[in-house]
Length: 111
Length: 115
Image 1 (cartoon, each protein chain N blue to C red):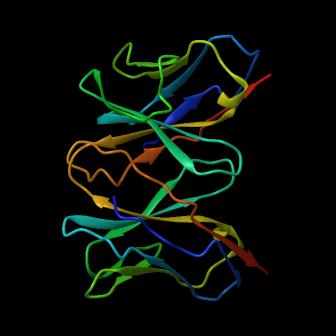
Image 2: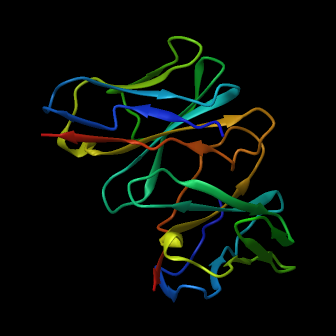
């Protein structure tokens, strides 16, 4: 499994765009990049997944450069309810493998 | 929207006692998982289950742990003789057939406190 590195914490204010970058230098050809969100005392929740270029859904956008050695989760116009831990996971999507969570990025949104 | 449910939400037990944590995965899902998270630490994988057998397990999942799918809806995690260090949030997750393994749906968790 590719090792991931992301900032331990980030602060933002309501209404701002937040970009969280994850480094995964050893990403393999078959690996996809997935982001999860976890609120305090709740289970992780899938946000978005991509392989290359850009993916957008109703919650976030995921930017992946051509070399795929990093990725950026973009949260548009955050609100207080976006305060959570965000995890970047990298792995092959085939099969029944378990998820491997790192320490994640703790995002604190202030009013 | 379908969701994974877990009971109880909080379980307090004495060291050495057996506990059973219960999960009801999303109804048409076929892959089931248990994870745990010690307070302030990472989410750790325990075990995965498919077609009525364990697919994969971590080093944490030793002989004190077992899983079962006793009927068509429940998925249970049993800890035979709890230790203080078993205190954690335990999350059940499920995945549908055809979905990528990355897209697992997690339950709200059971907070286990071992005294």
